[in-house]
Image (cartoon, rainbow, N blue to C red):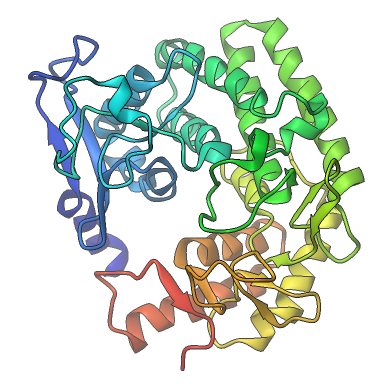
Length: 383
């Protein structure tokens, strides 16, 4: 019942704008601009790109025209440098937006549709955009659409690979932008230098773009992506593997290092599985990580696992030993928990994955009675 009726969330939390001023000429009359709203209650902005990537799979299957409308807006809103939009405007509009649009009203409604905002999760926005395009094409294959979106995918890949130009090719695959500015999927956390979570997402993005390059006959860029992949996988192994899991991050020029266990560090491998790509992390390494997370996180908590843990298994605050004071120490993202469950199953640990998923859904549906209004964050110690 829930699986079917949960589709009501799509019309409840979405907008579909007609092609009228100030929508640009790029927009087709029949497309308009379709956008999912992050959360009307707490963060009412349209098209926070990672949230849409994690949530619009049902649209890709059942309402592909809405996804194509959204993707064409992302393509049109991409900056000249190849930077992907973070949102279509709204309450987390980043600094600099006012300078791009001289007609911007600083009191514009948070549900803006025509004023893209850039930055914020700069390290991972490109992977989210690539995931949106690639998923649409895996479900709705079309050479015409592939050729339409390939230039923006390539342009963004080049932009993404130049976020830390001082690093060599392998290290920059894993890197935060120069100066460790902005964030990634796990916002409000400390990140520096080479980051395992960023690296996994970036390697999956590279494999998507490489596949697309091959489909349109751009053999030179397909080879460039293959070279980046090989260098990135080597760097991941040499710089970040640390015995029972990957390091959270490591910045060689400063010696700054975090050995906290990010429970969801294999999201890039989940992404590769979900998109039918070759592996981005070695199978034995992922198996070790999943065993570590199970023993130190899942087995010690009622629901899911803390987002970050110290090496002794105790919960750690938000990716920093000092804490970033944004999430409770034992919190986790619901979507992250479900991705983790799928990773277990993809990796052949079916019962472990089903157990993770069951405990998460049981809490939402049976204990909190929130089957139609799923929480974004949950406490792994909730009773």
